Image 1 (tube, rainbow, N blue to C red):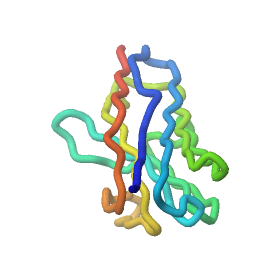
Image 2 (cartoon, one colour):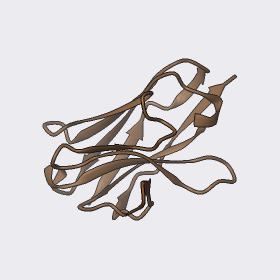
Image 3 (cartoon, rainbow, N blue to C red):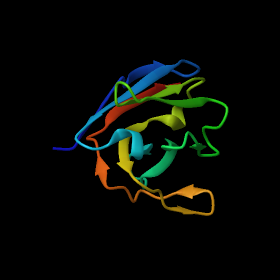
Image 4 (cartoon, one colour):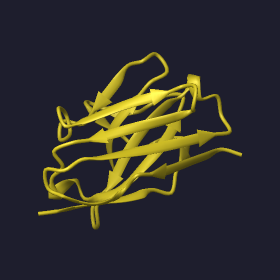
Amino acid sequence: EVQLVESGGGLVQAGGSLRLSCATSGFPFDDYTIAWFRQAPGKEREGVSYTSSDGSTYYADSVKGRFAISRDNAKNTVYLQMNTLKPEDTAVYYCAADENTVKIGTTLLPIMDYWGKGTLVTVSS
């Protein structure tokens, strides 16, 4: 059974930091791209970042320079370090996995095989 379990969300003041974790099981982690998406109330789900099996990474323009993604293949876990958080970063953050990703231009689309249930990040002003 495939599982992706997010943790690390919470309430933080603007300018603060959080580290999200995505613990996975049930698929060949080393061969998969693991991505983070987020969805704010009333908005579409948007791609935030991913780390591929070949070590390449992607960041949405809105988080470049503030967020950093990393993966621990020994633990089948991906982390998203979020710094200098802003109120507009408030959203439910989802972890997702797929062998490939789909992008239109530089926009990562939420088309992935497996999804977690999400963790809420709230940034207060």
